[in-house]
Image (cartoon, rainbow, N blue to C red):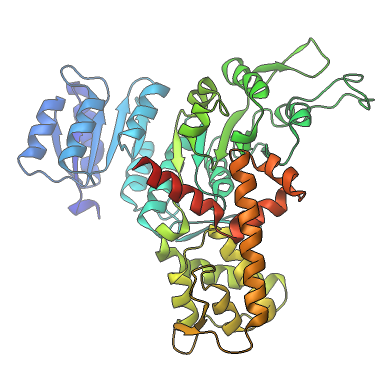
Length: 470
């Protein structure tokens, strides 16, 4: 590939320009050079289409970041690696936001330059795995769509910059898997990775869970106990459902982010830690900030870099891959023969909107494998509450009317409608505070989350907000 690969090298230091050009020409790259950002932009305006741009950050005139922005406006898909003599985290993050592929600190050896070029151009298969990337055990990352390949590339880049990362996306889109990928690709990969679900732990216990406590700190605290931050020292911690953390505890977390230190409950001794914080949430950020559910100062600290996971309905090209992968995994786990995924079943899966995303798809395959009934599986995917009283006919792949003998189905439908209405009302009354809504409905928090997905209430909420803001 190198003989036909064109590289534009931009650097204002003549010595560095000659040195890097020599390294590139040894491998037969076609090298074009520019000593200023203006010159680089002009060459691209005149029709130069390099496969890769190696761009110095600090230059007179328009600097590297301004040059990056301008050349990506001219060629949005262009691949750029930034070069700098200093490792400036702010500039690294800004370069990533502007679309840089990677960042290389000068001085560097030829092997480092080769690795970055291979990774940026996709010629190193170890750095660019297949569509399904195994992380460990049953955890895997799928990047078969352009959106997910972009996220995978951003994750690889941000993994090497020790800053907080905020992961956004609907429930079930794979935010925890993405966090594990960032940890695996980071220099902390050999250290501890811990996840804390802020929604699953009551607010009064979450502080002790995160920061630990001393003996006598509260009734029942007979022995001191370290918190997750101490246990995760030198590693990575994922704060899942960060929007459910009580505001007072958010203030303490902000202090940890700023100073990397805290005190256990019941102690005046300061504990210093070195922990990388990743955070995930599916909440509406502007609304959470407006209602003070999420502290603005904490949000901006966590938001050093954001990775936004698209819902499964926006990356449908991955559905066949996920179906086959889940079927292979489930059949092995439950010691059952894998069931066929017929064109009819596949088409039904592609037409379904998957409000529960990957989690719902995984559970769908599990039920199909256990029950072994394709027609029942396809009927399950037919949207509820469309008012037609129809069900999916797998033989014709179109709706057919429900005949005589559907009284049980009608009763079940009426029950579902009443239940969905009660849940929607409780959520509205509590301003979508799911813990309070669960208490009002006298069901568990997990049961409420399941039913929100079952009736598509989360999706309805987002549609309502979109229409309200239009």
